[in-house]
Length: 204
Image (tube, rainbow, N blue to C red; front, side, top):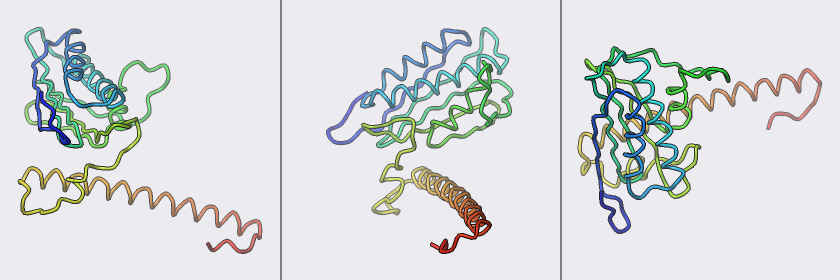
């Protein structure tokens, strides 16, 4: 993989890993080979890919001849990871696992740490996630890469880039809408409590 001056070239790594414990180490090794990542970003990606490969090993019913496909794409401002297996799929668990629970944590962690993620079934099961990265990447949401949010010229983008941009924008719109609704509900609760106590001047 190569790193350009002032920008990161689009790079891609794909491996078919054995359906055993070696797949976990193999997936983490792929993350270590990605250039231009901060330690925090690398740790986030390694955590999530390990969980997803572990999910495949535990839940996909794979045999000794099956393989788990891991694809890592490094783009300007983001990293996309796909974990694909020939299993029948599963129902994503989004609730926070209990402290004593040892399984079912993969999708919960992906939802908490990744900026975007999804589940696709096309004869195989593919779980993918994206992280928007920067020098200060931590497990907190960062701003989407500029080329996704405000491309200088939409006509210059490919169809795949346009679809990617649309996905980011609609995801953010849903997130902002949900946060706004929560804030409105909380504001109403606080105002009702003030009214109940007879406190004036709470219209700000």
